[in-house]
Length: 353
Ligand code: PHE
View 1 (cartoon, protein in one colour):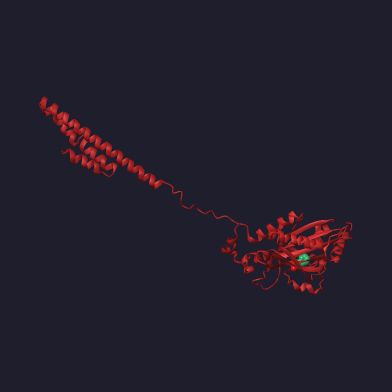
View 2 (view 1 turned 60 degrees about the vertical axis):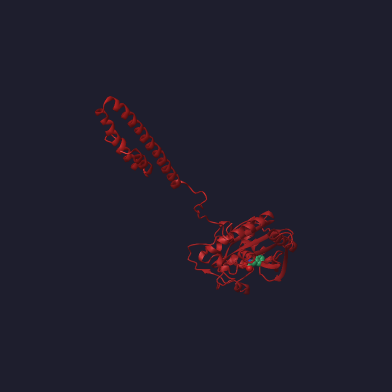
């Protein structure tokens, strides 16, 4: 047995198992060194003493070599285990897909908060509407040419559902059922149920039976406004729209009104907001002073329900605007169909808030 070879072998062992078998080979019960130890008995006392001392030193040296290598291998094993199990905190984490607020909802929220600040209440109305509230009661009787301006989705009156009148009362003679073509029927619904003065805005979906293209959708959102009181004037309307412009586009914003016709207002005006940053006018919607026929219709209806007439001597203004339109103009979106068709996430994600 050569001690140097033995020690070199131990240093070369690359696993703890290999080292263990070398240990058995040299130091085990039948190991080479152990055999030499056993052979000591055959020697004379003097030889035995000397040989015994040498063998003990060899044993010490081998045991030291085993222990030293053992420590090295254990350290290596620990090191590689740490490497294997370590967490690289610089790796990107898992993306947890989370929803976002749809662009239309963002715009709507912005508009509503502006009007809430001005003291308006927010109310909503039914999407399935009666011919009466969508048209007749707001000064568009069935012979009225303006009815054709808004192509209508008519519903088959299956008798399965009714459009309730204000205060949930079932009303006959409300005409056919339709998908509301604008949020204006809420003007009359609200007036029937409430006593002036009041200021409301009404966000909601509206429906038009028409060919869709880049600027027309069969469904879109409007925001309706209605303010009624003892002496509401056109200047109040202008003030409200100007305030909207400033809240959207800052102190430099302006509002512009141009005469136009809507049956439910007189005079009527389309309005545009001046966007100073881009130096352009944004045509947003229609507005005007509430037509006296609406006050009359509201009071007549109230009277039928046994409620007092409350609109004598009242005046008011109303406006209506497209919510998507505001986003289209603000972000330069080329096609209104991107909003809802195909639920196009690549489009919507650009506006994730
Ligand atoms: N209802 C009209 C439309 O849908 C907008 C409007 C509302 C105009 C109120 C005047 C007053 O186009």
